[in-house]
Amino acid sequence: MAAVVLIGAQWGDEGKGKITDFLAEKAELVVRYQGGNNAGHTVVAHGQEFKLHLIPSGILYENKTCVIGNGVVLDPKVLLEELSYLKECGVKTGQLLISSNAQVIMPYHRLLDGLEEDARGEHKIGTTKRGIGPAYMDKSARIGIRVGDLIDEEEFAAKLKRNLADKNNLLTKLYGAEPLEYEEIFNEYREYALKLKAFVADSSLVIDQSIQSGEKVLFEGAQGTLLDLDHGTYPYVTSSHPIAGGACIGAGIGPTRIQRVVGVAKAYTTRVGEGPFPTELRDQTGMMLQERGHEFGTTTGRARRCGWFDAVIVRYAARVNGLTDLALTKLDVLTGIEKIRIGVGYRLGNEVIYEFPQSQKIFRDSVPVYEEVPGWSEDITGVRRFEDLPEAAKLYIERVEQLTGVPVTLVAVGPGREQTIVRESIF
Ligand code: GDP
Ligand code: IMO
Ligand code: MG
Image (cartoon, rainbow, N blue to C red; front, side, top):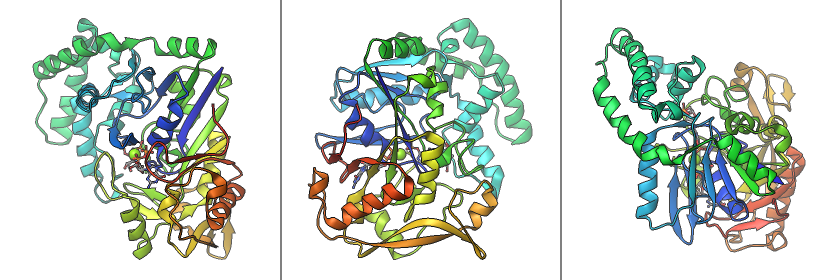
């Protein structure tokens, strides 16, 4: 019995797709439990690059079952496009299952995401405008349309009619936008329903049976700890629970089933969208990290803000996720930097704090306290064993372990599946 949850330990884009793909080789089931196509997970396998938004990153193996859990908000159009994209790429995909309780993203969600962002003006969140927030709002308001409703023609018609009446009121009266047509949406989503029906399953049951029968199950988080609705940098967060606890709710399993929680963290830090970021570098070094790390969003193409590794937030991630392991990615991007900095605390006036602050106002005003460590200049992209890394790179990893209190079990030195150093196997 082995269930492992993999989460982002920073603000997303840590390389979860790559590490999931790497670990999926040994797993039988790979499960997405939250978020939607706001995620962009890039996997490089056999020299070919794949960009996944909704389908778990285990799909590139022929014999894996991939599950879209109940906690996901699913845009059926995007899912069908992703399936055809994989087919066009010539990959023999594994089996896909979709929870009948996953929420469906509707056209009005996408539209409202954009209108709400515009209305926020200078207080905008910088969302991906994929309808994620509005879809989760409907879920909480208990008016959402689930996959199970979508594939039931009568239920779908009734729920769409009710919802659309409300949404059209909002669109026209609050935002002065054009109303949406019932028939058009109904017909479009009927098509999707017919295509997706065969994938729909009681995914909680499938996952439980798999765990009970001794199979290995990997839960692939999207976004990251600091984007968590409760534990992130609110309100500059997403509307779901990317942290490890989210896997229980979003997949329908109990916490006692989970053996290990792997936090994926970049060897530096990035963030897309608005919100505070104490170790951000708005200088040449920041631009260098952006260029060398190809730090441009997989989903929206936006440039990612870059900065030094912040040990305070990763130690916080260790706490709220109960991390047992860290996968440190993009270590190769730091090659050639003479002196590398690590944020170890925040200065507020005369005081220095070492824990992630409860108040977002404090976090916003935090000035990082740095420690400087020596860099290395050797190319490490071909290294496969920890002992073969340059001394300074080893010391950097060990310092990350000391500061976060979590062992760095995996180290990524390039985007390719094989560019991974394993210090202890996860499964
Ligand atoms: P995710 O959202 O957490 O899956 O991360 P993204 O896929 O959005 O962004 C991570 C990017 O870094 C992708 O383009 C990966 O191919 C790439 N990547 C992952 N690990 C490494 C690494 O160790 N080195 C380098 N150079 N690139 C990496
Ligand atoms: P992956 O899974 C990085 C950010 C957006 C915005 C905020 C809210 O690839 O790591 P949303 O559309 O979710 O309402 O936007 O969250 N965001 C991400 N940033 N990686 C992601 O996913 C993200 N998904 C959402 O930029 O700041
Ligand atoms: Mg990403």
